[in-house]
Length: 569
Image (cartoon, rainbow, N blue to C red; front, side):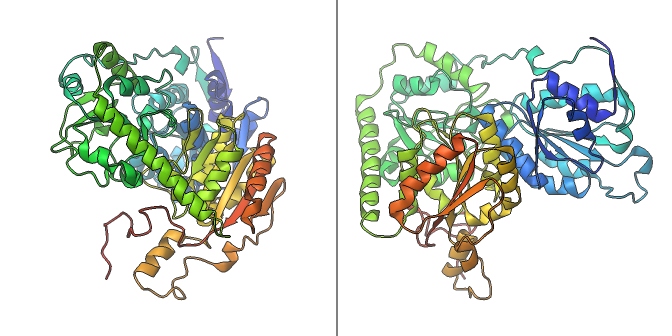
């Protein structure tokens, strides 16, 4: 069929999403419920959320895990305002998310209409494209453009608004839908096989490779590991780049910057070249670098010029990371890596593993359940294909410190962006699970983040989205409480933690199972049962009481919003 007329914009949207292969939609629609009526005769899945922010978080988790666009549907006015935090996370995570929203009718704008808001101005800074459709003839083209922009170049969120007057208008389509399947993409970087970047790589004796989130879904052929083997480079990852490379690889050394294992400091001080792939080189990833980007050049590869950091000296390549690495591998055929540097990498990696084992042995000698032991228990009971969805609070940052948690060769990791939006991981886990239904998905979260998400825990139970929530209970906002203590301010006046929250004394929603760990001897069995339940579509919350003092190595002494960012007064 080349021509069709739809009764209202939401019917057109559902037909387009169906043609585009979208199977799941997240959201909390507006009062008109037009989207729900349009969905009713279809087999598209609607995950009906209780909070617009959670809906966009879920769509973002789905997009990050699947590499496909995540779709969220919301109402207007305060609904859009509430979704802004989700757009912030999708924007900073470079996730291909499309938010479809309601809006004030054109004839009522400027009249103080109910829930009238300049929504485009609100969302434009956080989107690749923010557009309001005012004429029925433009609905079809706008839907196609939204999906195309969200998924092209550096991915990111798009906002599309359907004002109320389009809800009952006849919407025409005069040709077949154009979907992403109709778009040819050239995944290469012209000129990558020659130039300053390649010459710097050939000349390096002690190189390191840093893999960022832009390489997610771009390393299926293990191109990065092959490059590391060819040039003898140590491999690091940013937090958002995890699960891109095989963390069991002999040259993988952990996360960079703030989360870098102390035992690998020798590599950073001895390197003569750093190659970064798909990273914006955010502050946490570059924390502690001395000489990197000044005396030690940085070769940067990014598909988007805006993703290149001009703070660091060295050759820059604008192009697809996978295509660039493939071209380099061809040009580097016969290259001989420096044997001494490869041996140093191996020694540092072994020292990192040994230090972690020593610390776990010490932890095992007392009766307290340490966060590192929780991660070890997850490793013991969850299949290698597990996906850990993390927050970025005080205790859950243990999961960022390799090798206390490792994705190995088959596992996954989804984390908040540099914004570290509280509650993102707890909600995003639902989208991750829908994107990977046959894999265990474990949300590793603090109780502060969990309680922000809690309104949608019932949603997961109702929908059979089998996520395991491991909730580290320190009473609320552990990071802020630790800052309060360092600054000597009174906890009774500024209570960031609560004994009631730490006790996990909350009602259990329907179809959600909960267990509180009171003895660490029961931890492994409880987690094993939770993983089994999750694979059967059941939601389990495992509450683990923890102490504020149980902070990851190198984290407990940090101050403020970022290490060294504030001084005590």
